[in-house]
Length: 198
Length: 198
Image (cartoon, rainbow over all chains, first blue to last red; front, top):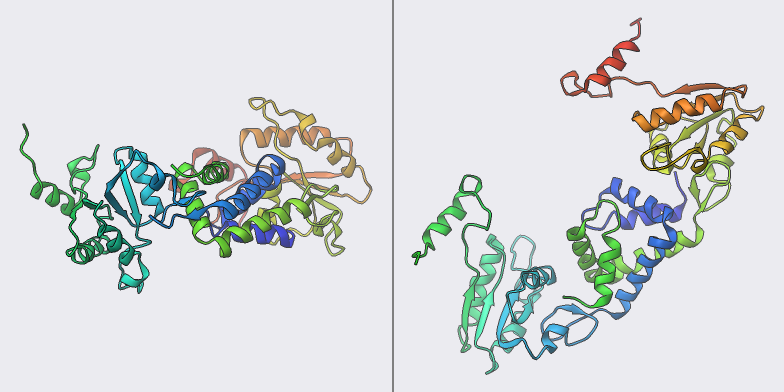
């Protein structure tokens, strides 16, 4: 239908999350149409990112500096470490703007189905960090899924020997959530964790 | 939140159709995670496409050769030209696999709202091609929208002086379409264009 260059471009675009074969075709056409304004700068941004972005050796975040800007920021509390599944979760936490400590990216969650065990995650590194005297609390900000909570329980066991408090995100009704649309598990969790209203 | 390289990558990705800010972030993370398998080859495919893909001087299709593979294909009938709005429509026609003539990409449709007039489209070039003795029929394969049909009427007027038959795509019930879900306009068009059943 089109030349091999276009076909290859579409194939690679279709491997991005959120782009199926149809939208990959549309994206390829937009790129070819706006060659100077979009195609060339996007390719340049990709090569730039490929060359400069590193994984932070301390926390596992992506940044152009190592240690990353968060680990290097003196104003952030080094005594609290928030454990997240991946960099996407780290960015989501940062967007909330409420957490002022440091992070630890696990690189996934335990999953028997996907064959992901403790050795595939940055668990030993987390235990080593938790063993430092500077660390007081570890917050497990993992997904409220079976795998996420299995991982949280495993981490609680592994961190038992360290002199740190281990906490998890609260479960309950999301902001804006209407009871009628919530699943039974969420309502049950919110009920069990009910708080006195002052 | 992340380094400037990542932010810029996300910004450009978000300008692709089908990718909002959220999915652009996800795409950027997947790209950074799969640097060798996806980020580098996609950037290479983009640069390759930017360097090699040309607009066919005859029909307006994208290809790495000019004239494009369709215009250069001797087995395709040069006496029938199918007029399409853009390359996406041309690809859609090709996917149907039923048309064996040549194409003409208009580069858009007339739109008073968007300020697109005849001079912004490849109309003069179409009239010149239609004036060739080799051309017998022009098929207007334009969208069944107000702008598409306005453009079709305009082209019929402009092609009046040429010795060619001008036709348009049939309107009616789409394959798999249930009457209950069709709009009144489509049902009306299908009724007016009803055919005797042999």
